[in-house]
Amino acid sequence: DIVMTQSPDSLAVSLGERATINCKSSQSVLYSSNNKNYLAWYQQKPGQPPKLLIYWASTRESGVPDRFSGSGSGTDFTLTISSLQAEDVAVYYCLQYYSTRFTFGPGTKVDIK
Amino acid sequence: EVQLVESGGGLVQPGGSLRLSCAASGFTFSSYWMSWVRQAPGKGLEWVANIKQDGSEKYDVDSVKGRFTISRDNAKNSLYLQMNSLRAEDTAIYYCARGQAAVGTPKLFDYWGQGTLVTVSS
Image 1 (tube, each protein chain N blue to C red):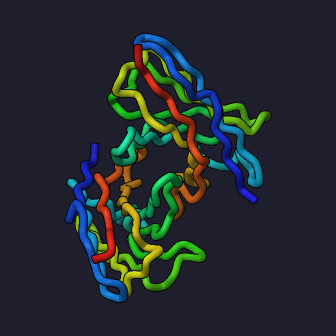
Image 2 (image 1 turned 180 degrees about the horizontal axis):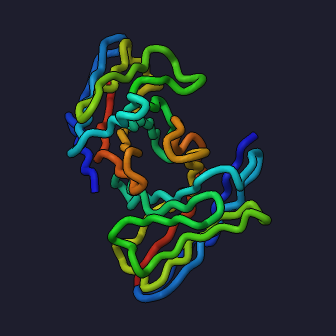
């Protein structure tokens, strides 16, 4: 199975500042046939189910604010929140769906400093 | 509006069984892979199992192999998870999530239910 890791485990950022979360897969999740990375990002707030933010590593889901962006390819990926807002306090998970047996990263908790 | 509503959770003794259900509406259920994802208290997300549109392909995580069975009834727009030989470590919120329209298409888990809590304890 593909193993996903994330760093850091948690971070605290001042309002309006940038937050950066890293995700690494144990093998490439890039499909050569369409040059797409099968990597998604989810946001989960307390007491709520997760919400899809980014798919194909860098495509923002409809309705997601443009301060959220995804980048990376192959095995190394990044989720960036360009200007942290109070409502962005949450746990963020990456997920690989290159394999039909999906795997999540362990999550990164984002708080306000 | 897409809706996924789970039911069937509860308290069960170790070694017992439960059957979870997920009622889907607002989209063509038979056109999508479907999955179960769980979250133990205070822990991260774990994909449990998925099933193809016609039920011909199923995959699950190693920790539930031989104990859990995913199934679906497209006529009833429903997804199921039969859980046998339950263990304390299976205690979690179980979410139903919409999968891809086909393997290789872009979006995965774009809709989730609110989850149903399964507690395995004596």
